[in-house]
Length: 51
Image (cartoon, rainbow, N blue to C red; front, side, top):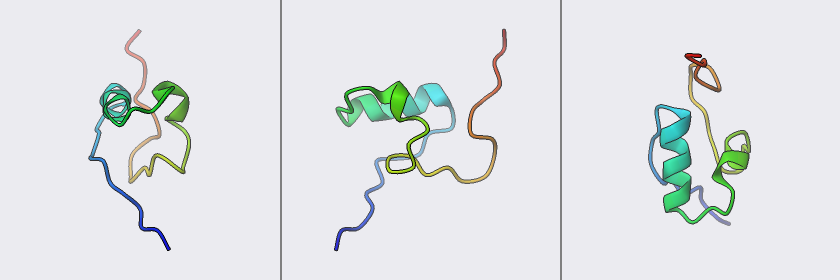
């Protein structure tokens, strides 16, 4: 049995990408919506674009 590992908490998509890069994830942007890597708690899945 394996337990989930928490690498940290990110409060934005950019912070999550940086966190995943630090974990040597090959393509962190493609991992943003992968529930095997990311557990989202409350709030929207992505921050709205300011553009």
